[in-house]
Structure formats: structure tokens, C-alpha cells
Amino acid sequence: MQALYAQLLVGLINGSFYALLSLGLAVIFGMLNIINFAHGALYMMGAFCAYFLLNIAGIGYWPALIIAPIAVGIFGMILERTMLQWLAGLDHLYGLLLTFGLALIIQGIFQNYFGSSGLPYAIPSELQGGMNLGFMFLPIYRGWVVVFSLVVCLATWFLIEKTRLGANLRAATENPTLVRAFGINVPRMITLTYGLGVGLAALAGVLSAPINQVRPLMGADLIIVVFAVVVIGGMGSIMGSIITGFALGVIEGLTKYFYPEASNTVVFVLMVLVLLLKPAGLTGRAA
Amino acid sequence: MAEATAKPAGAEILSVSDLQAWYGESHILHGVNFNVKAGEVVTLLGRNGAGKTTTLKSVMGIIGKRTGSIRFNGQDITRASSDRIARLGIAFCPEERGIFASLDVRENLLLPPIVRSGGLSLDQIFDLFPNLKERLNSQGTKLSGGEQQMLAIARILRTGARFLMLDEPTEGLAPVIIQQIGHTIARLKSEGFTILLVEQNFRFASTVADRYYIVEHGKVIDGFANSELSANMDKLHTYLGV
Image 1 (cartoon, rainbow over the protein chains, first blue to last red):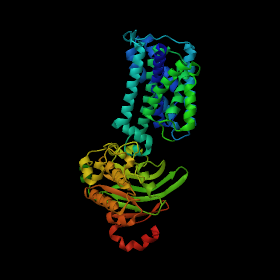
Image 2 (spheres, helix red, strand yellow):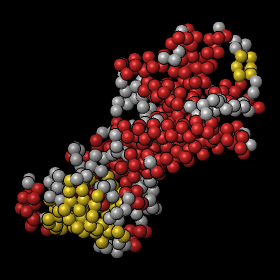
Image 3 (spheres, chains in turn brown, blue):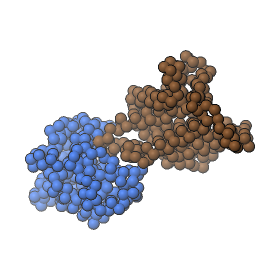
Image 4 (cartoon, each protein chain N blue to C red):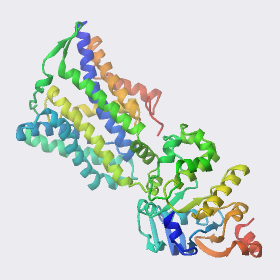
């Protein structure tokens, strides 16, 4: 029984990262119509940003949780202004190729300087240790990651679905030309949206640094699963990507307990099933 | 309001000369000339595909390639971006109405930002369109066609823009709703709004317009005042093919 709970927790943590990353992808896809293959590399940059802050400037985990998403978000906005914006109106394939190429370049540069092995990043002292919940032992940092990710995901959902700013964003997703003709600076909104999606990825990177170490290819491994999550959840649905992210993490965890051999493939098997039965994804709008 | 009253009646608000416009490779407008004076309701008439909608969209800055000259309150806006044009005080109500499905009625209504003071308050808008008040929490596209048209007009009245461009506001609507929209346009005119209207429904246009321009093959080929309407009826029938 202990092992089952442990795997459930691992599943929830992976689910947190899936949710944060697929949420960012959904936000970006909705507004820019770009499948952001650079997402994994930007997630990795978030973790490295936290690592640099600590080891070069002596800035710890808590400030890094804010600084890294902003810094990497600004980097993303520069990418959008200088490159991605020119892809507006073109086939998805161009965005995919450009962002995939960017991911390879970014990961290549980090690999060149840091190799492929992991760099350690310590759990902040406030979150060290664990709690005995009676039925299982809960490392505090892992509990924090799950709760904090959930809060960030729900806050993002609230921002997009329930606020004036979010209404502008949803409207611009539907009909950018008309929204612009009302006097709203849509190009600036697109840049900020990309920054938001990238910031969420970087935040996930910081959260993961103490658990998974900091590695140049940490995002490349994860992003393939995240894209399967996005396909299952359906591109462009905010709540859908959050729920699917957490749910698939848990399903993966359960598979690790009941049938470990399938734990690496279960997400992809589900993806195939969803594609066969409901090609737009579980919550997605038909393209 | 101050903006409008400060303008002497009859001053030219919009002047368009030799406007040419392209959709991708196809050349749609071949030199459009017309003007709109403060406080007027001016109607562009013409057959389907003549270039009326393209003319409005060019003024709004949402047609990719355009040449010639468009001046609004003396300012050259030929090459301006559409968000800047909107902030100068031009508001556009598109033919397809442009109600957002992912927004509820309230969000649709509040979407266009205030560009200057003097716009209608929500109370004044609900006074004009009582139906909207009861449907505030409905999804935008769940409204009837008439209600959607009212919402599309209502949301640009809040912004403070005093120059409205309405593209076929009566299309596909029941006579009683068309009448209501006619009353609305008359009331807006009496409150000092300037309106550029595109219409196929000539009978409707004649109840609200001060002047007409006839658009054909991407050009303005004729124009006359409402008072000269009866003298021009024969010509009009030929132009519109009715």
C-alpha cells in the first residue's frame, strides 16, 4: 500500500509539470496558433536560470521562483518579436519547424557548456524534511510542488476565463482583426501571451530543479509526453489542459504500481485511443 | 460630446480620395472618392461585390494594401494601423456582426475600450436596447440575430467614438427589428453622431440617410442628397438592378 501512495505522489508531481507545461502550450496555441516545440527548452532555461541565480548571484529559491519566469518570459517575448511574429497566417508546419530548431539550438548551447549530466539544486531549507501522514511519508517539497502548481494553474484559468484582460484575450483568439479594430493593440497582447506561456514553462523548470536536478535535456525528455497530454486534452482548452495534465500524471503513477512495464507507454496508448475515438481531444474544440 | 459640439455642423469629418485597395492579389477598389460631414448619415449603396464593405474596412485600416488618401478630422490615416484608427474615434460594426462566442453578452459589451469621453453609459445603452439587459449573462452567440445586431451596435456606443461605420445592420433581420434599428440610428444622429452606413436595403436607407453614394466596380459613380431621391429613382433602379 505504501508503494501505491508513493507512486500516486510521483504521478501527481509529474502531473503538476504536465499541467503547467500543457497549460502554457494551450495558451500559446490559442493566441499565436503556434505549436511551441521550444517549450521544453524554455522549461530547462527556467531551471538553469534558478541555478545561475543561486551559484553566481547567491539568490535563492524563493526569489528565483519569481525572477526566473520573468527573465525567461522576456527571452520568449524577444523570440516572438524577432521571429515568431513573422509566421502569423502561415501553416502550422512553419511554426513547428522554427520552434523545434530553436529548441535544438538552445539545448545544444547548454549541452556544450554543461554536458548532459545533472547539476544539483538543493531543496530550500523551509521545505526540507517530510511529514508522516499515517498512511504514507510525504516529503514536504513534493507536497509544495503539487499544491503550488495547482494554485498557479487555477490562477491562470481565472485570469483567462473570468477577467476583463482574459476576455480581451479570448476575443483576440477568435477574431484578432476585429479586436484590433476596436482599438486594442493585439500584436502587443500576442507578445505578452507568449511571455506568459513561456513564464509558466520556466516556473515549472524552477519547481522541478530540486527534484530532477538541472540538465540541458530535462525538457527534451519531458516535452514529448507533454505533447501527448496536449493531444489527449485537446489543443486550446485551458481547464482541459490542466485536468488532463494532472490526470495523466496520476494514471502514469498508477501504471507504475500495477503494471510497471507499461508506465512509459501508457500516455501514448491513451493518445492513440483518444485520436481514434475523439480526434479533437477530450475537451478540445474541433479545428 | 464636447468634441462633437465643437465641430461646426457640416465640417468634413471623413474625406476619401482615390482610394484603391487590394485583397491579396485581387484589386477591389479602383479609386473611391467621397466625404462625410459632421452629424450626417451617409449611405453607400451598390450591388453585392461592388466594394462597399471593402471601403469601410479600408477606412478602418483592416485591408492589407491600400493607396490614395483617407483623412479623418484632417489627419491622414491612410497607412495607420486599425487600433490607432479606432483610438482616433472611428468605430466599426461589421456585417457579420462579430459577436464573440467565447464571451458572454456583458463581456462582449465591455470589450471595446473607451477611446475618449462622451460615450454612452450602460444605462443609456440599456435604455436603447432593453433586451440586452436581460441577456447579460448569456453566451454572445446564443442571442437571436436581432439581439446580436443590437449588441454589435451597442458595444461601439460605449467607446466615445463619434463616427460610426455600420455595415448592413439590417441584413437578415425581421421588419420589426429593422424598424427598431432605424429608430436607433435616427436617435444617434439627433445626438450628434456621424454615421457611414452600407446598405443593400434601399428602402431602409431612405428612412435614415442624408446623402447617398453609389458604388460600382470599386468606384463611387454617383451621389445625391435624400431630397433629390425621387428625381433619381430611375437611375437608382438601374444602378441597383431592382
